Image 1 (spheres, rainbow, N blue to C red):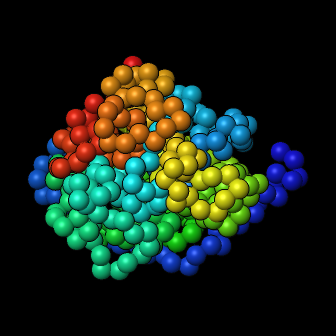
Image 2 (image 1 turned 120 degrees about the vertical axis):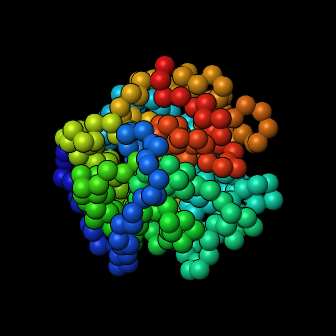
Length: 339
C-alpha cells in the first residue's frame, strides 16, 4: 500500500473515530417468554449506508478484499434496487426491517422523513400497527439487537420497544459500533442483529460520491466488515451465522446528494448473502422468479428485482419463521440462497 493510500485510509479511519458525540445504549431486554421457535441460525444484517456498488468494482479485490470475499463465496448481486418512492436513508431502512414499500396510501410504512424526530413511530406514520423482523423474531422467542451510527434509527427502538432487545447508537462512530457488535456476537446468542454503518454516506455528503475520500471510506468499511467476519469464523458458537449485506442507496459520482430517484447510481445497491448453508453464485441466476433490472428502476408492476426491502423476510426465512405480517417484499419468502 503506497503512502498516498495510507494517508487517505488514515483520514477515513480518523473520521470514524472522531465524528459525532451521541452514544446511546439500551440495556439488553429478555426475549419473549414462550419457548423459542426460531432456528439456531443467527442472522447479521449489515447496511453500508450510501454504498455505490461501482466503488466495489473500482477499488477491486486488493482494496476491498472483504466485500469481494462475500461476493466470491456467497450469493450476491451488485444490481439490486432501493425502494421505488425514495432513495434516502430512513425510508429505505424502514423498508428493510418491515418488508413494506414506503407509501402509506398503498399499505406502506409511511416513514417519508429522513431526520431524527423524537416521539415518532412507524405505526403513527403508517396509520396502523406495523410489524417488523424484530417483532417476528421476538414473537418466535428469539433475541434481537440494533446497532446504528445515526440517532434517527432510534425510531425502530421506539416503534418496537419490546422486540428490540438491545439498542446501541454511536453517532458517526463506525469503528466503535463495530467493536460493540463484535462483543455482542460473542457474548449473546441472538437470532437477529441489524448493523448500520454510515461512514460512506457521511463522506459522500462531505466530499462527493466516488471521490478519493469516499473510496477511502469504503476501503475502511471493508476493513470493519472484515473484523466482523473474523469474529464469526473464530468462534464455534457463531458457525451458523449468516450475513446479509446491502445498502439503502448509492450516490451519483461527483454529487453530494442522492435524492434523485431517476438516477441509477442512486437506486442501484448491492445485496449479498454469505455464511452457513449459503451457496456461491449470482442471486438472479439462483432466483428465476426475480428479474435482473438491467439499468432500470422497476416499478411495482411486473416481475420484481431483488430489493433492499427483501432483508426482513429473507432473515425470517433463514430463521425458519413466517414472513412479517402485511409485508410486500419477499412476502412469499421465495428468495433463495441455495443453487
